[in-house]
Image (cartoon, rainbow over all chains, first blue to last red; front, side):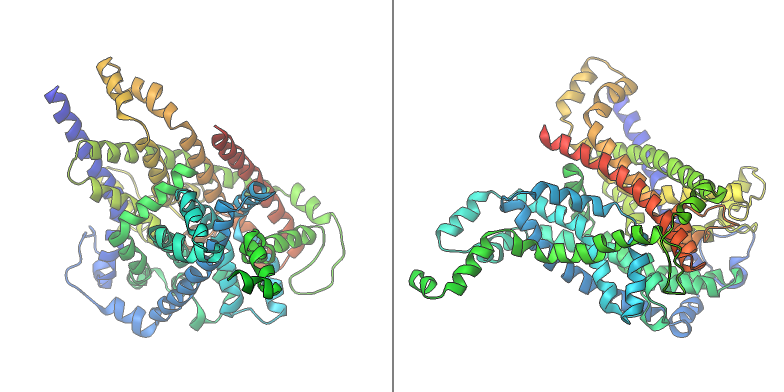
Length: 278
Length: 305
């Protein structure tokens, strides 16, 4: 029995290493490349680590290409989308969780249906409306689309959190003279703060990654989020300058990856909560 | 408080409005109608026209559907999408399950490194799809110093054209997508595995059931619904993938990796053929809805239990 356990542990460790290499290697390789000089990049056989911390690639993407403008735009868009999505989602999730009405279920499932529709389908007419009313290349309309695509999942997600709170809490507050708005703001919101936090994280990462919406709607370089900015960098470079692209990629993923690694506990619990419900 | 309410009927009305669902759902419904429902209906309308992106006049016709449904290019695109989805979903599931099982088991044995492994396995989830495309393009570099070619050469594999050969390109895109989507698979299956009570597994250990029997008779049946949900979500996510393919191959070489979504984009935004593009988009929409209905049926069945 003891032998068996040692064997089991050894094989699990082996598996851990394989998993670790498979998922980490592409990221490590990109980071390594971002510090390499051009001769180093074309060296054969390739070396896993660069000879020195060569910063010229970062200098190029930051000072010449100005990728940080994209990062700044992404932050701006993402923060508004997080706040906007929560403002729309929380009341709706409350209604689905606490108010009984006809068509509640039907409505909830039609929302689920929306979640499955590829954004490119809606973007076709939206592009035309926006060009007609002069909203192309502006954040105003685009942010609303970002919010729209993150709504369906979030309504279900936050409703899931509200469902775990006993309704007696609401009832007690109502007896104390609270109306529904007060029940939400004074009683429920403080209780589901961890849920709201996880929801914000998920919205943040999703919006940061969003590509097709800004790719279709934004064409001025100084308004692009970092995802589109990186694709433009890619198309402006040739293969001999791949190290610039690697540096750009590192800049583009650093915010979400760091956020994820620090807060992974919340993300995992958020995602598993969604999974068990789903 | 009460006398106040009687004195001001406006406030009374507001109170009753707050009691019902309408006020709470209004923002959601407005956003969804403006940015989902109306545009979707409009795409359906466009699909029955010969409209172009460049002009505003058009007439209604069924020609767009006729052209799409009789063109070989459409079926080739559909076929490529199926290959892409098929490879992705199978391997995302297998890998995701393996990792979920290893991590969950490691946790039970309180092994060190479990949390680190779990975090690493999920990193791809926090990386934007376009960046994943860029990273894989770097790794699949076709010169001898390209890292994949170098590693394979250590095993005696000759220099491979991962992205410039049409047959290899669709496989490369699928592999990159497996790397991308395994995280979501893993986390769902991991959550599922955590719900299995350990007593059941322990009992089978005492009965002397081997690993494969335990897997087949106990573990997989217990998480059957999670598996189905997972597979359906992976199908829909892969089906709608645009970002990663765009930066990895741009649909090329030729049209060898132009999956359906990319085809819609190209038809409309580079060829300006709104009618045909919309007809393809509606077909895409129908496929999306069919998968969604499966998903909804499953979810309601589970809730009914």
